[in-house]
Image 1 (cartoon, protein in one colour):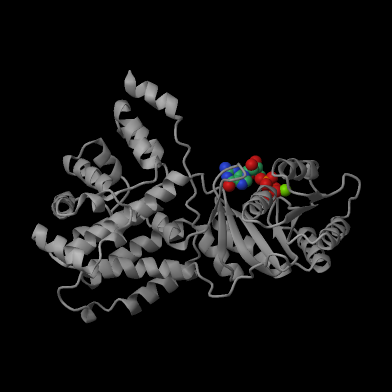
Image 2: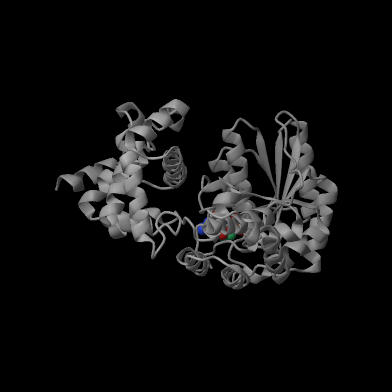
Length: 442
Ligand code: GDP
Ligand code: MG
């Protein structure tokens, strides 16, 4: 999906005259890609219509960057599709809230329950887990193991076969003990069956959840809408969590799940471990969907294209999460030389260095470097763009013979790099220092 979308975006970038036809071609190609990614036909059609309404090419004053405006409109529209515009239930510390997890077997409910509990525990909550899955053998053991590892209280039974009874007892007990997040893990079936939905309805009836979270495997594809809708029809789903986003799936089904449940995606699962869990960020998700800046696999890319002896230093710098202006200077320098780091960064999409626009990009980077040459050392070694106030920006512009607009653009690029890098590095397992030093010394 992302490849064909970014191809569409790139085609747009390469065309100097943007007219109705270009807009249509681009929309068609993106729509095809979205359909391939199992986004519902009607949603794709709505997006097309809305984009055409928003982007009135005649209205855009000459001199403005039309391509940028179209790109922005598509981006915004996809973001809007992921925003159900409905307030999300937010639990309160010190007050018992019941959170019920639903989803098909294997979607990642049990894993996600623990991740959710662990995430909140770290933030000072008192979570507790109830295992209401009596369908699958070993379900209680799995939850018990997870909970014990995270030191989270749990409730369940090997003997009792009635999930409704266990759910009711567990919630009652933890309410009495004043836990503020009482998380109910439920069973799933391989297929959407009447018995499953009836069970969910009954568990919800006895536990009276404040929030029902629908857990969906990112790779289920075309089935997303129906599956989400089926759960929504039996229990009142209020939020969605997408799992296995560490796999190949881009998670296009999220759009369907949001549409079907009219609920927001709140977290994504990015691995089997307890802490491989992230707050869902609409914008970075859409960016990834569009292939604009796909920073996933960043580390693999480093290993692939950066010569081994240069890796430790680069990784070290990036992993310190102190992405200074000076480091950006170095990265741009590499981009200019089209060295390995340059190739690596350009692999992260049209935004940084669109294919076919290398010349323009290089000129731009050169401009930014000239600008940075007029910055003070303190500014270069800082990670705080606010250090440069209005008068400093004007002086830097004057000193470098560039416009204030150019300076602002450079700062904008810095912010984008910094944001994405820190996010990426947070989720990466950086090679151990010892190993890296050993290699760099050899
Ligand atoms: P349940 O049947 O819905 O309770 O699903 P489980 O929690 O038992 O998960 C099913 C499988 O998916 C297990 O092997 C999990 O380790 C795995 N899993 C769950 N979430 C993720 C995730 O975000 N990434 C990956 N890679 N695996 C996951
Ligand atoms: Mg389970």
